[in-house]
Length: 33
Image 1 (cartoon, rainbow, N blue to C red):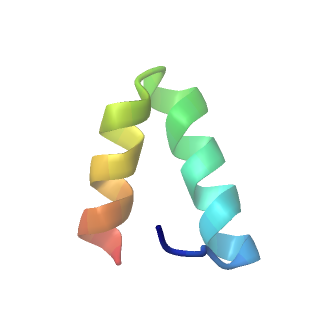
Image 2 (image 1 turned 45 degrees about the horizontal axis):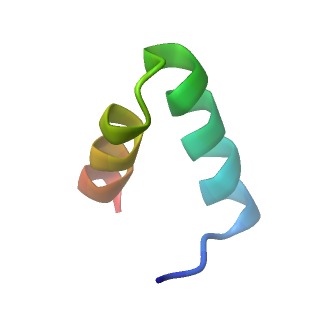
């Protein structure tokens, strides 16, 4: 597992709420990193 910065956590939360799918949010987060 890896740790996210506060900015990273906020980004992931916004992605999850936007797409409703945790997998989509995680995939987008990984592409962004």
